[in-house]
Each structure stands twice: as C-alpha cells, then as structure tokens.
Image (spheres, rainbow, N blue to C red):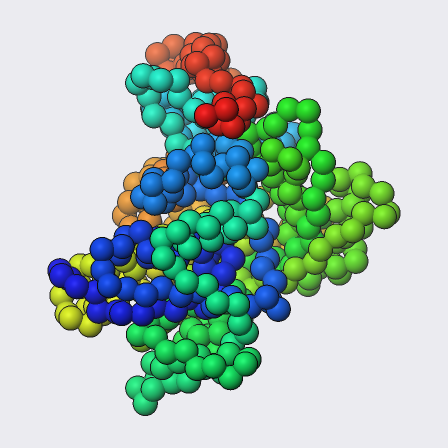
Length: 506
C-alpha cells in the first residue's frame, strides 16, 4: 500500500472529455498529496465529441467526484437514458425492434418467467419471449419517463445519461482548474525519451521543454505517446467489426424529450439518435468497404428527411485497442488507448474506468515506484476490450438481414472461440448465463440479461411448432399479469421533461 505518491508531476496530453475527466479524477483522488497536474491542450487539433451516450458507470464516477446531477446536467444539456432501442436489426416481422435496458430491481420479479419462455421458445413453443414485455425500462422509455425513483422508493434502477460532450469537457475543465490543475495551450512537436524508453519530456511548438514523472495520453486516435513514441502493438478489430466511418449532424429537438437512444439499422451500418434538452445528435456509422462517404451521407439525409442544404460532418474510426493501456510511465485514456464502435456507448466507460483502475493500482502498489500492479491492470483492460468486442460483435452475428452485401458480410466471419460457444449454447437452447460464467466473461457492463435481451430481441429462435395450449398449465406465463405489473410500476416514475425541469429548479 502506498503512503506517498510515486509521482510529483503528471502531464496530461490532450483535453476533450477524456483529458478533463482524467484531470478531475486524479486531482480529486490524490488531493492530499503534493502533486502537480497539468493539461497540455492544442488549439489546432479538434476533438471528435460524438460520444454523447453513456453507460450507468458514469453515475458512480460523478459521485466519486462529488458532483451532483443538478449541477452538471443542466450545464451540459443532459438528459436521462433508460437504454437503447434497436430498430430494423432483424428481418423477422415479429422482432422489428427491441429494447436493451438498464436494469431495475423490479425486473427480478419476472426474470424467471423471461428465462423460462426463452427455453420454451427454443423447444418450439409459440410463447412470449420478446424482452420488451418483461422490463420496466422499456415501459419507461415508451412513456417518455425518466428512470428516477421517487423519494423513499424501495427499488433501485440503473440509468445513464445523454449529454453534449463539448459542454461536458468545458464543465470539467472549470472543476479541474478549481482543484489546482494547471492548463497550457500548446501543440506538442517532439517527445523525448529516456534510455529505458520511458518518456522524459515533451517539446512544444514554441520550443519549450516540459518534463514530468508520469504522462497521461489523451491525444485521441493519434496516440502520440503510447502508440507513436512507445510503439505499443495495436490489436485491430477490423476483421470482426466492419464499421470504420461515420457521418454526423445535429437536428432540432422534439416537443417532448425521449429518455432513450435510438439505433436504427441502415443499408451498410446503423444510425444513432440521441436526445439532448436543446437538440438531437445524429450519426450514421458505416463501413467504407461497402459504401462511399457520399452515398452514406445521401442515405442518412433520406433517413432523417433533411434537405439538400443540410451540412454533415465526416469522421474516420480505428476500431481496436493497444496491447497495453499502461506502458512504462504512460497511461492512455480514451481514443488513444482504443475504441470499439459506439453501438453500446462504451467509449466513456472505458475512459472513466481506465483512470479509476489506474488510481486503485497505484494506491495498492507494493513497490515504491507504483508499478507492481501494472501487468494486472493491462490484463484487466485487455479482458474488458475482449468481452465488450464479443458483445458488440454479437449484434452483427445475430442479425437476420439479407438485403445488402454488408449485412451478409457482417455475420460471415468466424467469431472468437468464446463467442462461438455462446452462440452454440443459445442455438441448442441451453443456459447462456452458465457459459458466460464458465468463460469468465466480464459482466461489469453487460450482465446475463443483456446477452439474453440481444439474442431474444433479434428473434434468434427456431420456427414455432407448438402452440401455448400444448404446454402444461403450470408452465404457461400470464403475460397480462406481467404487463399490469410493469405498467403499474411505471406510474411511480416522473415524466422525463418534468424530471429535467426539476433539475434546473433545484
């Protein structure tokens, strides 16, 4: 255990959401130590800023920083997120869409019934196995309600947020500066290394040399320190995740604010629609192997019913991760560490968890230099990338679309051994949760229910051979009872717009 920090000065290269999140967390967690933290941020390099959806882990991150929702959400035009609705990912008319929720303790009441009907559906019975009918978050999203429990309500519910990433970076910048983080606007022209390969200093465009004990690389896809200077090997996911491009645009808000992300499958990828209090963020993630940027823009324009005069932004993505996120005296956070396409909004989870795990690794180090847990840190990070990649990849492997070469190619590759075992287990009608546990799949982001929602929601079932009437009475699920329970439970939650208004008033 560390009684003093092994670092006296930490330099963070790059601002944006990842940089300022890192600065805030390091400053807050190590506020009692004699530590200098500086961000060097270039005004010549733009930030991508398209990651406006999150997972529930960010709620805990803000709680650790001591920042309440009523403070940061209005400042960032943020909304609540109950989950993601996936539309047109299946050709089965009974499964045109499904909802991937964040879970409520109330969902446990009918978890057994959901699992049972999945098993019966695999055995050929025409039972109700669509996940939407069992889950509270789906009902809240349908009614445009917020996942905020009333005071003294005895059941917890996980939820996340949508927000303007640029505004969040600005908000966190103000916090970091209040917590004694220093900020320098400069472009890095050179990186100097020591004889052992670690980073000694960076040289700015003006010729100033800036030294530090430790560096945090938040330089985005450039990965200036981890990739370019330390030359850590890169593991590409391009063979299993085809999307490498995106086209984005902002559109006007609606009269009422949804509390979910929308993910709609298009010809060569999928489109997101994210509600903020003042606008919608829209993007089309596609594969340049199957569609040109111009054709993607035109398809997206038609999808959104926008005029020819609408102006779009185009982005390129590198999908994969570096073999190590912490190498020598460099920690990479955000895109400089790796990126899995934004289908389940995992980018900021990786960013926040990376710096949280780093602080824990250093605090619990058994050597004075603070590096005794470095290998364990990197192994945990690689496992997280692997598990999330498998879950994202499963969206494509489970699709049943045959209308374009893209969708056929998306399920034509050979998955990992672990993912193949999960798919085989599902098709055999056996227990996927048991296999997930046996394969030591990290369930930090996607629990058993998430995997089952994905497969059941896309209608990955054999053709029904038997009616419900063929089942013994004791095995028949009363779906009206479940519907009544879910609808009654939803009455306790506020309308989304009312919850957002209450934030501003507080």
